[in-house]
Image (cartoon, rainbow, N blue to C red; front, side, top):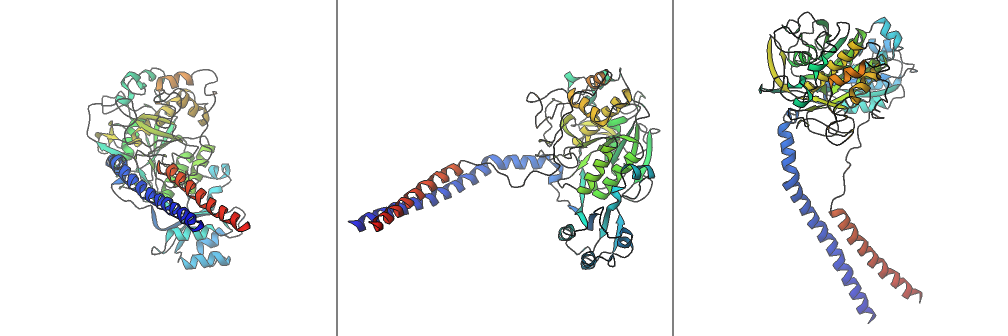
Length: 509
């Protein structure tokens, strides 16, 4: 009789055990079917919308590692540059020899004496190491980062421009029209302010065609960090298109109208002819722009990797009063890309002609505002014009408006300009700030009206993200299988536990 009871309990346990695994198998099949039926079409559609998902681009420059020496490090930077394997530091010499470091150079070379004084020359500790290209760059960065003398080490990441050529011209410059036409209401704003030549907008991009009929005379020639010369001529077209949106010459019976008619453009080339920009090029472009008087910096580019070198240049520019705006990205994904995700940056998404989120625009917690970014007509090299789409096109609308605000009230700080941009935006989507539109679509007329008020910009500033770190990877939400399997597992262990508990009682008796 006792054996029969044990047999029955064992049989029940076996059945429950089998049911548990059968349930797991069925849930796996259901999950696969769910992904195939519901998620796969969305993924494919997002890939079709996204120009960056079609081509696998390199993540970083081969054979280059960026390190930042701690300020208290006893390693001589000069020795590091002149004799990388004879610095006097045993571990550093070992790694430099292991990775066959061929050359070491400062990342931030073109610093004015004034800027060095203002920032205590913190950026001078950032060095670029050129290692053997056959070596693993990521492994090298991890090893250098472990050294006591090194604050951080990272690959020289690539960021990419965020634009899609678009031949649809039916909505030429709708983005500047009134809000009922889903524009930023620049046409009414120009009655209040058309910009000042004292305000410089730094376009850190693929360069600018400074001979273009709609830009000639207002472009300040900056530096070319791609080819290491002083000729920032555009060999891609992206920077010229962005510049036209922000500040093309207006009311001249030619081409297009820029948001800030009279603002100057500082052309800084940090992106190559293929649309790729190494972090060292872009970071240098940012510091160069602020060193040479740019109060607004436009970054119509981005990437998924947070770069400490890029962050240092952003923080430096922000401390010195620059308004920094950057594109959120074109992958219809959450979160927004870097550098837009850094807390000092105004992250810009794209809206379309219907006043809704553009299908390609990235979104998320870090998004600040949106601006028209689909089928935006603007200038291209050799006196050409074309409509392009992308968050790259949305971003210079915001940069141009920041230029108008500073032209109207030069005493405003970058924090106040940001507050005006967000507090006067037209709320779209859910009431208040949301992940798809941020604080809303910028409104030029309302922003300039606010900028003329006494104490303007003094309203509470929207709090940027407290950390620039990316969200934790691999975070998922529970599906229907989770609770089901948990319930079966609980029942199974209760019965098995009860079996052994009863057996233990019988043994004690």
